Image 1 (cartoon, rainbow, N blue to C red):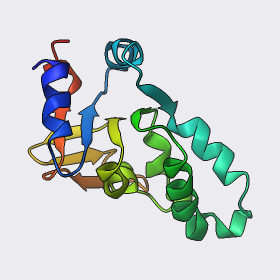
Image 2 (image 1 turned 90 degrees about the vertical axis):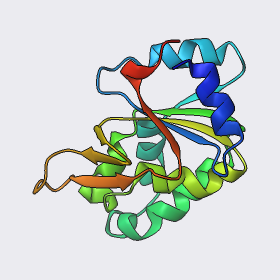
Image 3 (image 1 turned 120 degrees about the vertical axis):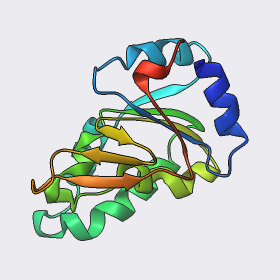
Image 4 (image 1 turned 180 degrees about the vertical axis):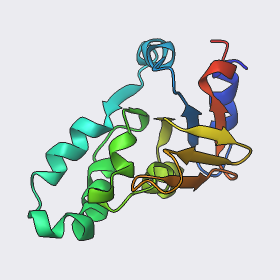
Length: 151
C-alpha cells in the first residue's frame, strides 16, 4: 500500500485518523516525507511527561484525560503522533492511544504510530495479565501495519 493512498482514504473517512502499527521503530519512513509536506511530528511521551508534571501526583489518573484533550486541541491540524506507548501506562490509567485522539480527529488529520500486534480490527499491546496490557478496537479507523506500507 502506498502512504499517499492511505492518507487519501483517511481524509475521506469520518475519523481523519490513520493508525500505523510499528514494532520495528521505522517511524522515519513516515515522518520525514510527511514533514516535507507540512505535517508536524509530535513525541507523545515527551508531551505527556510535561503534562503530568503540572498535575498533583494523586490526581494524575483523574485529570490526565482532560489535559490531553486541551493539549491536542492546541496542536496544528496535520499531525504525526509517535512514541505513544506511555499512554498504556497503569500510572495514567491505561489510556487508549486511539481513543485519546479519535474524537478530535474529526477536526484534525492525525497519523498515530503505535506498538502492538494487529489482529483483524484489534491492536493488542503487551501480554495478557500484565498491568499495561491493552486491547484497542480500530474497526472504524483506517489502520495498517508499517511493513505493509510501500512508501
